[in-house]
Image 1 (cartoon, rainbow, N blue to C red):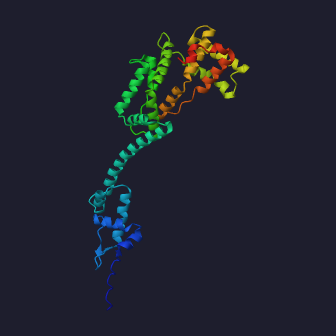
Image 2 (image 1 turned 30 degrees about the vertical axis):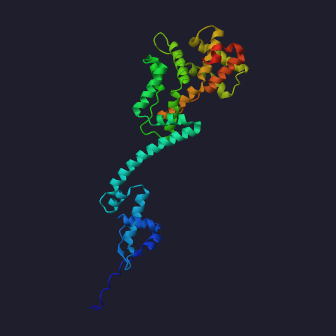
Length: 327
């Protein structure tokens, strides 16, 4: 039988506040603050009254630091380390709070980025801030007012379909690009000149509706279709071959525009100029971003080519007072 006594367990190592600071990379003042707040009570005290901490305290300090770096407030951290509050519950609540903060920051960033890009002044940035913070109902009211100004209170069936394709619908949780697009688009809808421009285009579309209420083919789509081979091959608008394409275009547009050849040329030139307005294309591009649609193809190359071909073939005949003013 072994008469040797069993060895007594060694006492756990204790660390001074300075040693704990060096081991964990935590400033002494931070450890002292956590201790004073009850987050990190000392394991013991030295004979001279200095705080001492064991390994468990070091692990507790690591948890406290992690939770604080994640932005969890001190009372919640204390409840977690004291096991009065479940960590998953606290994490879920804090994640929800962060979602709200992120949404606010996203809006602020969109306003500032738009202001920086556009060289916005004091009045404009206030307007952007107001647009960014509209409620869903306020946004819908703004859009409805814009569409009413363009299409009328009760647009006919063909124009009602067009109105739907021009309606922005910002999602409840937009990304940064959607927010920036919404701000620029909303400002554009308030532009009286742009509203008048779209209203003129809509009236032209309404006047092109057949007796059965079915709209005739869209002029822009017709131009893009006929001119596509010229753009694909790089054909110059003043070349002999361009004349053949222009003849085909005039033939296709005659049922849409009517009138004799001279009137047809002038009316087509005027409409090409109006349809090439960069504000219209910009609105459609912004609309696609806001609604999450694929980016639309630009009609400007086809419209520009057709306008240049008209000038090359008909000279001043293709320019009327109406087209010169863009009315």
